[in-house]
Image 1: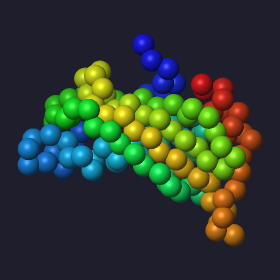
Image 2: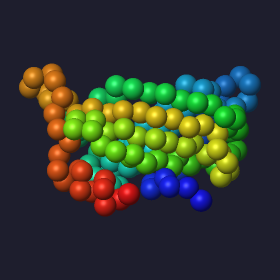
Image 3: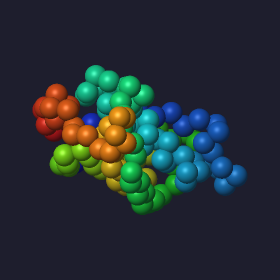
Length: 131
């Protein structure tokens, strides 16, 4: 069907719904964040909270509205790791059909220098194995 290597389900909460009766556009970024957290936890065995990653790029293309009673999943893949960056491509799905596509880039920050640091070899191995 597709080449997304990871998929997770997110809950549509009452507060996600706007005055037009569908999920507010800004909430899609929260769904991506939840999918990243699930991916880091399930694939890398670490929470984003425990990492020194920062989001440096976020791009969302909306395809169709998500309704309050839809089942929402987020599929993602890591196309190719950079030295210090983790680019991620997403597909947000409502009842199995594409609602949005997105792209983010996480960069590992060095807390001592404020610059970037290389993706740990163990993370590279786990991400490659998961593809």
